[in-house]
Length: 545
Image (cartoon, rainbow, N blue to C red):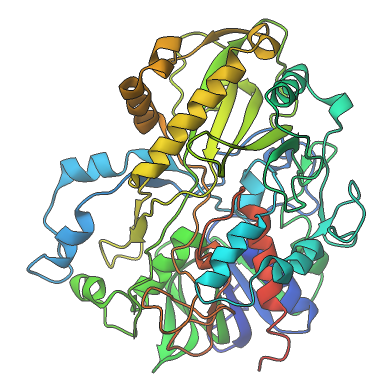
């Protein structure tokens, strides 16, 4: 179908309009269409070919996609005063110009997926679940239906995982999940695993079983090296249905309301606005896109909306707050010639371990292997290393919070993103301890014999607290795991945006189904939990009229 089919006119009323064709949006569209609902799925990016040839760039599970299929977002790694400046401006809708501050603010590329399949089409194809303790936090935020025992059936519904048959895994879901056997690991990953064992870290053959500490093979949603994203799995099963329409290169600017009832959306295609009517609107635009659409629609912090000159439809100050991402530090080294090969798998093994800050299992560590240096965002390859190996230290449960908000009502302007990384001092302390632990791995005989040089870090830096802390603060990067910016919870929680089934508080016929709902970030890359969340909420929509 063409990106903007004239047959889909404003006169038609859809049962469901779904905003965003990413991981959650494709699952939502496929499941509702299979139930016989008339569904319109809207995506700002392009579609993928069906069938997708193996030569297509999105098919290669061995690399991240950071251009061509991405939002060109720029994020501040920490915070700024820009929101305060906006709210305190004397003229609504006008903020004092601060170009120098703005340039500093937008310095980090935050290239989230902008294509049918979204993040699942451009990420590392890692299919890891959250842990039971993560969902204890979800229930503690007023969502009693989201305990580990509640979410496990929906994790299982997403997958076909034959590596570990039994009650913990599904065998009939759309997403294939595989692990590399220990006997088939790359020499560096095998060395990393052996060093884990030598340091007393137990084997954990199934990282998705709910056990916190251990080392094991990374579960991935791949098939013979091909990335099996949500578009080629979930959505593919419903593409043939006549009641499902997929339209791409349409940016939704806002939700339309009659009173407090959602009645459709306004879209933009190359500067041409249009209105599409619907009985139900579901926002699946992700933790950056969803709060931006809400704020343009008059749903959010009243002070911000007043400053932007946007009439208030629903006063929900939690919209855009609680933004969370996994901070990480990657230590890059040059492998000896012949150790690494372009095109081989880049993530095979992960370890969840205590950093040493206390007894908590608080970091995930693993190698980024067989990496061509030109593919690393922000990596200034002045050293002439064509291949590099990274040892990644990712904080599992960060306490720092950021926010996302509009600083103009112009629908063509991207939102302001403040990731807030390291703004809670304990996050930096834990990462410092994690880097010290990682350094012992790099200096071990198993790995040191295969690596020639290490960039930036030295024994002296790691041993000196002030140098270590400064290095961690300046090198800390996000994982592109944006969550939490429209979290679910009870109406009594002033920062909750929806109930535990994604219904936006105070409004009718409007739901959110994406990672912005997460009350707390899971202790893993977020894509599989996003798919699970969509499956679980959709199980409550079957009888909706």
